[in-house]
Length: 61
Image (cartoon, rainbow, N blue to C red; front, side, top):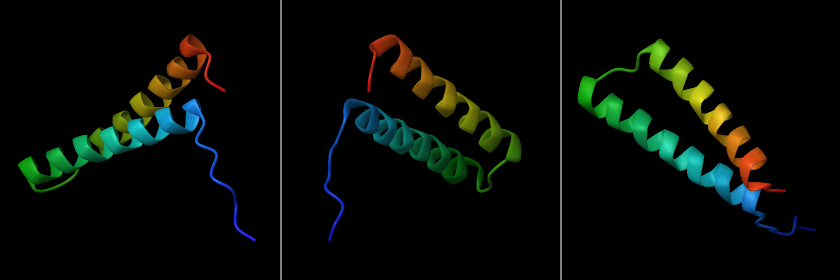
C-alpha cells in the first residue's frame, strides 16, 4: 500500500545537499530581500555538479 523507505547513501547525500541549497537560498533572500535569477541558476548547477561528484567519487548507489 505504501512505498517502503529505503534511505540509500545517495538519497541521504541528495537530501543533505538540498537542505544546504535551501539554506543558502534563504540566507540570500533574508539578506537582500529578493532572489536573483543568476543566483538560482548557479545554485542549481552547483547542486547538480556536487551531487554527481559525490556519487562518482564516493561510489554511492
